[in-house]
Image 1 (tube, rainbow, N blue to C red):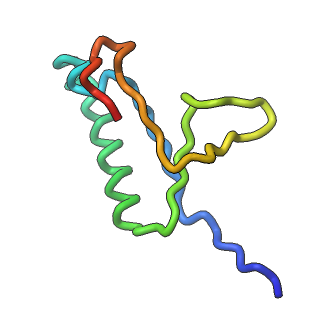
Image 2 (tube, helix red, strand yellow):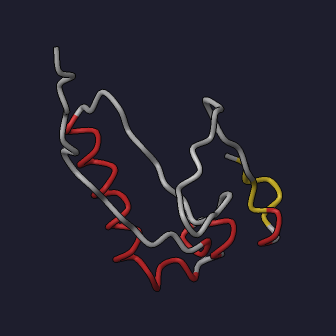
Length: 90
């Protein structure tokens, strides 16, 4: 019996400058409100699709020229410490 292949339903890519975080932007984030709005719209699109699986790719992880690294973990964490916002953690 052949395995059923489920196609990718959506792909969303958004810029994500640290400036969008209020504790980093300190008011300057208002200058990139359209970027913030796009991030919210992307989140709404994902929520409305109610997918079984969401795959998040990031340029801020292990990188290889010939393949994508898939983390074996079930979560991730980080902070905005390098942007002088130590209190903001994800």
